Length: 194
Image 1 (cartoon, helix red, strand yellow):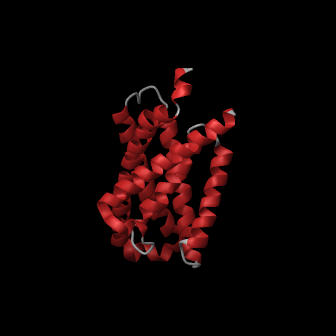
Image 2 (spheres, helix red, strand yellow):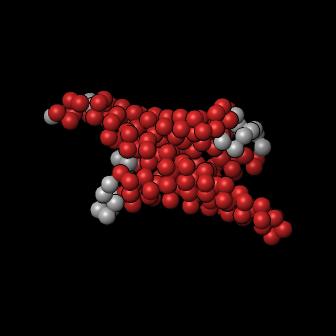
Image 3 (cartoon, helix red, strand yellow):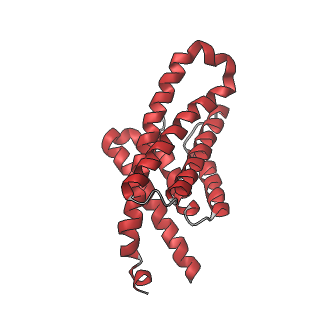
């Protein structure tokens, strides 16, 4: 019975964190969040990735988290993106780096010096911003001859990804605080009362 309660809590956390990220992005970018050919679509993909990673890594369910992220990658690659080999690398890189960033957020937020909501949200904003910017560097390593002639374009892409990542981190922080502070006590009152 306890395992079912933990699974329900993980599902609630995943949906609430992903929902906040996707919902806030929708308020800013409109339906572009749901169109795979537009860059705001990254909020949908990363929002679900963050939700899965947060819900599983928070309780140190790393094997389940990696398995669910692999399943998410298979679903994403099979249904949303084209069958081009570059998309295989692109989506995989985003899912891996964003998941690692979420792991670092959770690890750092557990430190005693980060003891309030504001610091936790700031931490996720900075870590996800840097990680998302790093993705551009990592993806350009696949084409080293492409880097030097297009350095200014790469810096532009890094800055855009830094902004997107920072917003993802901000939205994640808000979603986590809502999940932990509001949603979980309402849904799991009897556990709190015990």
